[in-house]
Image (tube, rainbow over all chains, first blue to last red; front, side, top):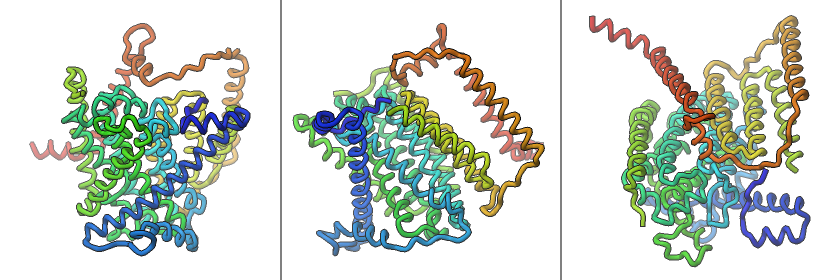
Length: 354
Length: 174
């Protein structure tokens, strides 16, 4: 087992100089895990705050602006409130599965975060099947939603869970195929190599028309995969109460809530990595300052997150049959044709490179 | 350290495999089975078979287990419990399992395993070339045969699901 953990060279060397090798590698793993837990919490809380401000902006309100500068500490206060809340539960629920469900959702989100390349150095787990690993992990998160819905012993929760299962299984295909379209250009699944290829122009420019189609399909199915509006059938407030997490309260509810936002960040981060060159600056203007990469990466990712929030506050919710028609009758056939077009373009060398 | 990780995963797999067959709630059995399958993926990661591990996670944990959970959700109420089997059936199953484990152990211990120090990671490109090569040791024929099998299964599923509608259209034409 040789996990290529490469956070920063200096910390790595310093740890190995003061400790024996076995202890140092374990300490390094713990440090990396703690750092990623910190990133996880900060991003989750920040995105909750961002969502509330963006929704307020779209609805011509002000939104939370009392706690801290412009309300930036609002979601921290909310998290403290949720921590101190009583954990309620139903008597006839399946206790074991009911308590297990939030962890499936949150652990799969955390595992996916480890593969994301923040900068060239700040990339914890650069595995040679990167993209495929992300797809595999994201297919596990839905198990948590299905379990939570079933074990709460509540019919609205059960209906929400069933809808979510159907939706995620369908849209996973589109996510995989649209990423596969881009893999045809890069010729590698490893995320660092995918970024390396984009030094000659971001992939959305290199692949021009089919890449733009693939990007649109990826954003649509990514929004559906995270169960966000306009695809939030799993928790449609007007029909199902709160859907699959109706019976959850306090911190367990917060886990589901946090995981939804982290999943949104992950989808946006994959899109930024595969289509917009991750930490690469436009035209290489800051190539001499590699630490600026994290700003470029976060900038690209957050603008894609903003796009997904824009979807949420603009489009009305779909019906279940419309949702399935969109995937199986439109997105999937378009995607299959798109792969063939992309293969032709790569074969005939029609890609645009600088 | 790898040894301890292996023992931990193996213990987890054995415990959840036993729990999976002995639990009387159907969905809990499915979840214990998920732990076994995830443990197999973990062992693949341990020996650097990353591609196989990801396949294990997507196909078994993400695909088959989710389908199983969906079917349990459709047919099984939360208060139902599976009934116990008859004594004679239990004894028969125990004997069959013991014979199985005996064959397995005899095979493992009678074969001399060679310890190699080659630690090369099989890349996805190697697997792709292997699947599409038509020279000696290539897998193009099984690959194509399996794709035909999948096509047949898909057509069969459509016929079963839409059978009445297709026949109805035929009757209208008459």
